[in-house]
Image 1 (cartoon, rainbow, N blue to C red):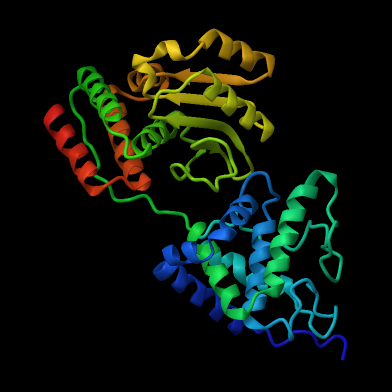
Image 2 (image 1 turned 90 degrees about the vertical axis):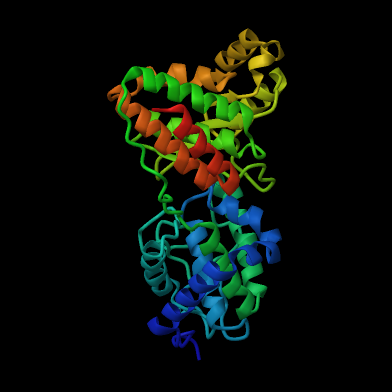
Length: 370
């Protein structure tokens, strides 16, 4: 009988699916990454700035629905209960999903419960291919392809995929790193910059140290913005660069961090990638190039950036970064030293460097600074 739909998707049922998915994400997140590795590029794209910010939560709504009912009972594309015998009220799931995600620290890029609105299918009974206009055509096609896979999934797999999204999008709390209290003025600040620069030159751990360093510097330089540090050497990354600055709506600065010698074409490739993703501000940190400055044709690179109407900021040594950035920061020398040391320590934690290296860092700072 038309109009009955999946009316038995009660609020309690939805809450149970969400809480179970969160528990699984916390206890088995790494296992899910391996199990559903083929999903990672699509999920990263749907969470990226290249995609309308509601597509990922809408996919999550579909996963909740499939978790509750198999394909024979529910059609994930039939987003209004009146659509058919297998229709369901997708908006009702969304009203439970988004507050829950916010509560448990999962970032869906929106806190609005109305994720089913302002969509090409908002006033439609079901989602069909090709609904989006030219501007969002590519993103919608990727979303629809992922939704087709949800349609064919069984309830158990759908629940695990929801858990995977929770795991991937969990906002990590800042670790309780040591808080530095500094008293010594400008001489101590200069000593701190030398200690940090030497530490970055001498340690990499696959690029984690360099990324932590750049993220810490950008934290201080742009305190009102969000600084995001990506995974090191992530083959599934769809956004160019390693550390990004932006706000909730969009990115506005892309930075690449390398702790190996780079050449001119490396920087040009990065600039092209940023531009192809709609960006015009690119910072390049070639942190191992202090001995190989001849590798980069700086004049050519700045000319390339100017010809493409792009901002290019480039550094070839950690000390050069600090000498340029610190004079632009507000605060006393003691304040700046404390902020710099604390932010770097926290970003090292976030990057996942080894415990041994973290211990080395604290030992070095304790012995080098008064």
